[in-house]
Amino acid sequence: MTFESSRDPSGVTILTVEGQLIVANRQELKQLVGDALDQGDRKFVLDFDKTAYIDSSGLGALVSINKKVREAGGELRLSGLNEDLSSLFELTKLDTLFVIADSATEALAGF
Amino acid sequence: MVIDPSMESPRRPAGRDHFSLDLATDLSQVGEVVEAVAACCFAGVTATTRTRFRLCTVVAEAVANAMVYGNGNDPTRRVLVDVELHQDRVVVGVTDEGEGFDPAVVPDPTDDDMLESECGRGIFMIRRLADAVSFNARGNTIWMTLPRC
Figure 1 (cartoon, rainbow over the protein chains, first blue to last red):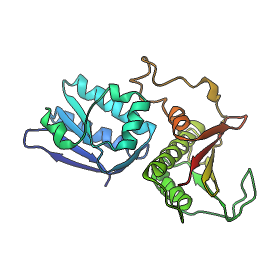
Figure 2 (figure 1 turned 180 degrees about the vertical axis):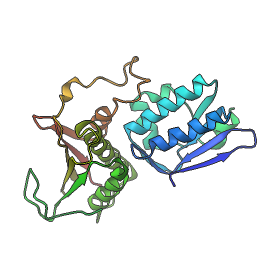
Figure 3 (figure 1 turned 90 degrees about the vertical axis):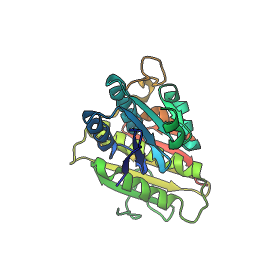
């Protein structure tokens, strides 16, 4: 399993990405968020605390998910990016597109 | 994942400091390929987290690009991953069976009008994470040089 899903008491869906987010599993993540949106969920935290690396298709999936959530009137936050992943977001300038928190706890507190 | 150290490389003969992977086009295998390459590259050396991250990311990127854009997701087409191990660095070559592309005309994904695009970051990321990047004339092979420790 590469994704772990849970729900905060306040109604925020938390998806933890384990291992990597790459071309092989990005569709699964998009599907998970799409299904949650269909069920009425609007607040999401994607936590990367257990993520080793992300490829460009994984980043593309995050861009796509962010758009879908936003279009549905929801909000997506990212958390737990280590130093390497943070640098990836900075060099691609995707850090300007996302709300990024140090931890899932911090991301949840901001909702 | 089968690693064949005896496979003849298009660049140089096989040896103990060289290995190759001959892969079918199958995106579900990319993660396993990355793990296999990383295990061989870092066997016997103490690599930093940053070094592992860089290698894993660019290998995932190059193999996925080869399968999707090079081979058009055609499962009958092959991807060759060719790895040269040096004491302080590793050179990874990835070759597909496509027509190739011109790396000079890849758009900058950090331009404002590209920022929300779902694709187009692969070559950009490889160029920034690898120490050196080159292509063959046809544009269907990429070589990436990275540190090993």
